[in-house]
Length: 200
Image (cartoon, rainbow, N blue to C red; front, top):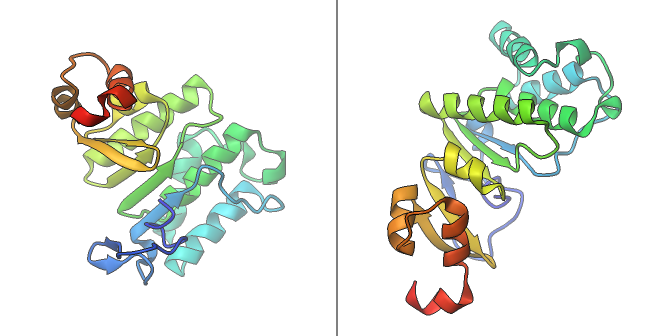
């Protein structure tokens, strides 16, 4: 994910986003939220979000500002907009990081463990929003170890074991590959079982 985001140089090959190299001026095409987001904790939530939007779009247009306010309200962060981030809980920091990414409206979202630190309501809010964005033709790339969320949320799935991509496809395709009709967790355990390695 860091290579796609242009933060880590590949040892070989190149990565392209919409025909542009990921280490080049892909700009606002990609919105990346790492598992451990870097936040300027002396800023308030609204200051940080406006800073990120201005950084990627070079402007704070009326449309951008409306989008910022929309996501603050959607994630119930409006009462905390003018509070310094250092006073936020872990879940609130996760929300403000996601709000900042969403507010400059990139067509591609890449999110690493987006529900970490959130309560069940927050998890449902984010999952519902990501599904809505995908249905509006945005590309949403999510990395998660919570397999029920991946099974429920994702159109396509990829299983990585020890740094190697061992299977990808829809849930139906993974079921066919593993010769199982059960849930994603059981499929994952089956495909990552060393005893099955020669048969994959």
